[in-house]
Image (cartoon, rainbow, N blue to C red; front, side):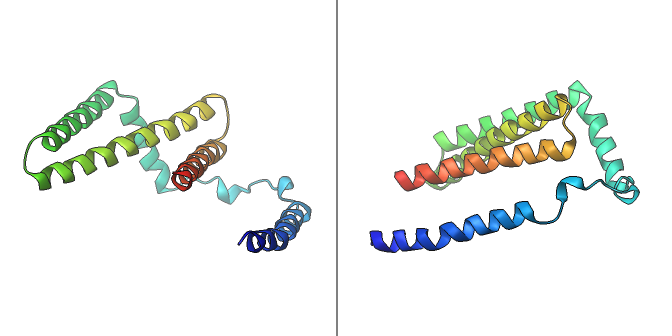
Length: 146
């Protein structure tokens, strides 16, 4: 079994090196500059403006937080008391919402800190995606080790 892994590594190692060398020596991507057509604002910009107006209002954040807390509180109470079917569904829902909230908080925090440091939005999204990928790899590693 270990010889299979060694043979696979021996075949895939040079392939990975060849792909990386091809990407590095390929087209001059580092000389790219966006043209005028890519900087035009579309209807997506109007939606961003609407989101930004709500994001600047503290009462919108307070209301969203209150709805989230009340929803999680109801889910926790339902998972503690009630029929077995409701307990399992509510417990799963609370776990999913809590995990999604934690991941969203982390990824949005990375995005926000990157944009506040002066990075463009595209780079901030790339940094958030990198953090998400690393967290996914860590979760998969723990799953495989357990």
